[in-house]
Structures are given as C-alpha cells and as structure tokens.
Image (cartoon, rainbow, N blue to C red; front, side, top):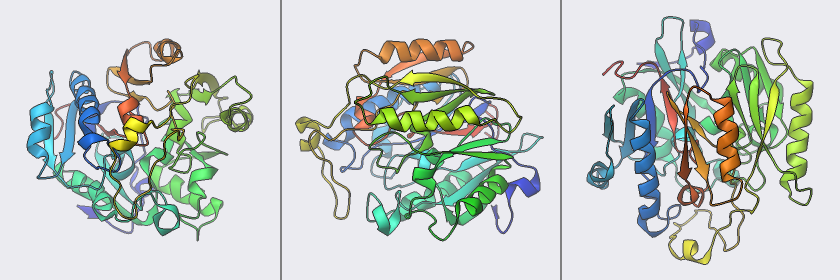
Length: 373
C-alpha cells in the first residue's frame, strides 16, 4: 500500500540503526556499461561473493532486468538463507540510494520510504541523463517484499546521504544535502525538520563535508558511521598533504562539540583511508562505455575510497579492501568495534571503479530472516 500525505513519525515509525536485526539485504546486479568495465564481469563476481556471504546470516534479494536475470541466477550461490532474484529493471546498481529507506514501529512492522531519486543532482550535476527506472525501484521493492511504502517523491534524498544510531540521532553532510541539485528551495532548517518527521529523529547533526572527490556530493556513508549508540568511526588521514586531511578535521571539530539525541558525547574512532589513493587506470577506462549524458571518468582520477563504506549484516561486517597497507588495520579496528560479528574483508576495487563501495550497493530491510516469506 502506498501511504500518502503522512509522516512516519506521526505513525510511530523510526529509522533503525544498520546494526539492528535485518530480515535481509537488497542488491542490484551490475551491468551498466558506463559504470562497470567489460560488461561488469569483475564487479559481478564481487557482488555475487557479497550476496553469498550475507546469505549465511540473512535473506538476500538481487534485482535484475529480464535480460540479465538468468545470468544473475547462474552466478548467485546461497549458503543458508535464500537469495531471491527479482525482475525489477534499474538504471544502475546503487541499492543504498535507490532502494527504500525502511522504518519500523514498536511492534516490528516494517515500512519503506520512497524518496525522489535524480541521479545525485538531476539537471544541475546528475551523473546520468535518465534515472526513471532508478526512481521507481524503491516502490517496486516494497511491493515485491509486501511492505507498505510512504510516498516522499516531493523530496530528493539518497540512502547514502543519511545515517542513524537508531536512537533518534541522524547524521548528514552539508556538502550533499545543501547541494543545489537536491532540494534548492528548502533551507537547512526545513530539511532538518523534514528528516526528523520522516525518520522519527530528535536530532540531526550536520557535518561539513564527505570524502574528497566524492561524486555523490559527499555522502555521509563514506565519511562517518555509527558502530553502536554513542560510538562511531570517521574517515581519517594523518597526511597533512592529502586534501582529505582538512575535510576530516572540520568534521571532527563538529563531532567533538556535539552530543547525540540521548545527550551522550559521541566517541569517535579514526578509521584511516587507504594510504595510497585509488585511481582509475587505463585498463579500467578501456572497459567503460559511457552513454550520452553520462559522466565520464578519466585516467588517474582519484576515487572516493574509504573503509567507512562497510556494511553491517546480521552476524557480519563486510569491509572493503583495496590492496593497500591500511586494509588490515581497518579490519582490526572494526573487529574491536563489532565484537559479536565476523569481520569479512572483501576485495572491493571492482566496486569503487563504479563510483561507490559495499555500503553503496546494499540496502538493509529490517526484521527477522524469513519474516513475510
């Protein structure tokens, strides 16, 4: 059912933290030629591996169009919980941004929110010319999973641009949510109030910036993440010559002066970015085929690689790895912060070439595995 002219907070629904229980996770099969080199062959292996690992702990749904459904089914291999392939066409594979943001009530009922998606900026600075199928994906996912859905098509928002502790605190970046390509008619105060009503939040913390050279205009999920109530990680570098150095310092300055919705000081753990920037290579570029109106990459372009773009599953944490000397230390820190979960390193260069990472390609559905099946 589509719910119109109502806010989740009015119905007693809130956005839970990612580390709360999942019914499962949504992914989208990668095939877009302008994002995934060589017909997505390398990316598909990584996506399938992520789905495989997640199926040890929760259900997985993978969206694919009719042309690629059989290919996805052939490569996807479940472990304990099923991997369902849903025939839902999209424009690309960023489930975090085009899938529904889910909210829950005290009884455990789950509903989705269908924000308007405009390819990270629409006509102002969007990354591709047509995004109608992506914009329709959230509602289609809710229908397939038998979840009621709030209509928020009057408000542009991507799932990667919001993060919550599940206890009334939401964190965003000014760089993204105040971008002229999102909701230019709304002030920061108006956006804050809308987020509070839609996510049932008591407080919105605005960080200045996201990761350097992030083509999503600085999504928060590349720079900051709660790991528990009152605990968080912030992407960091100790290199004062790196452009990220000053950006992270500004964000930390804000966090050190803030409290969460419960009045707690947030304990911030610095999670180093890769020591060597990850860049587009000539081999990557040869495999890409941009469509008219699509943003094109260049050899040597710095990609927004960050270990903060991990994903928390029911019993695991999937951590991107870049073949960098900081790969191991990122996993070690996250093992300390998620003691009850298995930390799983995932070779993720094939994903970052597309423009995002593990958190960007996943969207959690709260609940219990098997619920609603």
